View 1 (cartoon, rainbow, N blue to C red):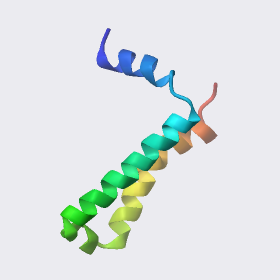
View 2: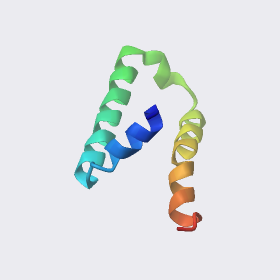
View 3: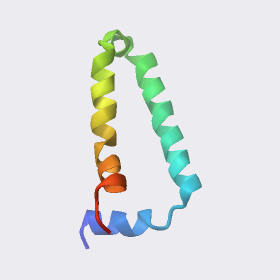
View 4: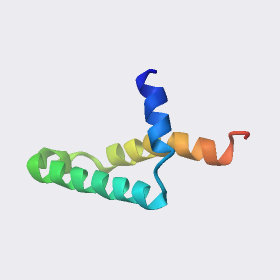
Length: 68
């Protein structure tokens, strides 16, 4: 069993609340990085927009375009 097979099996055990907690944890980690590395806050806003769009691209693809 490879890592991705194992991870897919484990993720199926999570419910919507667990996924929201993971999102909250990710936001908290992002805020911690911004506090520890203040240079991250001086980056142009469009860099963050591009990162956000790229991060959501697969989710939007699966929701709107992927056939079941």
